[in-house]
Length: 219
Image (cartoon, rainbow, N blue to C red; front, side, top):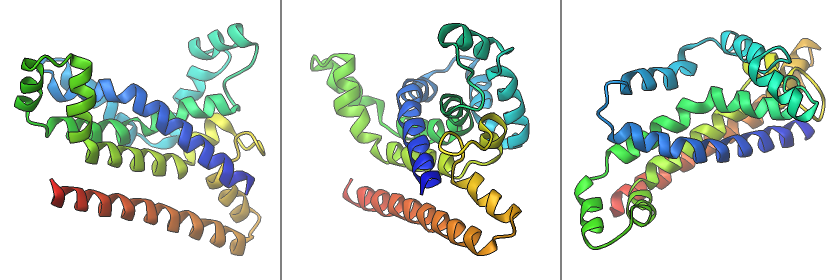
């Protein structure tokens, strides 16, 4: 249960932080025509195609005490980012980034710009247009981003193992616990944990599709 709780905590924090960071990025990607856009999109999509071990290795170098981000963190707090929950959150954000950015970008791109222009001509400020027009119209993309970001973080293994290690109560999430049970040839316990994770992931994705289809019918 400790591993489950830690996984839920990690997935929740990662998803919330990614929503805050990725929403303006996705909005910009959905609207910009600058030539740098394909480069940014390729960079955002990179975690999907890179093996987790490659991503984990470079994150380990970046977050380690000798890395520029890890070294700065050590000077600031006196603690290392590697093999810590904070480092796990940063690594999870990088690895789950495309699963949040892309649904948000698709949701924003599907909005008719004339609706936003009409609100602006009526005197609405940009922030009011975004909160009252853009966000409600992009609700299906937002829900998809939340579910995919949460579910993907919940099932992480390779990046988590390389950056966070296997510290009980600190970095040992449910995927690591399943790996430990398999290593000990305790297949029954590994099956129980895997089945719970499988059912949870399926339930989240099913809920996402049900809500999005109902929303589409009412629009």
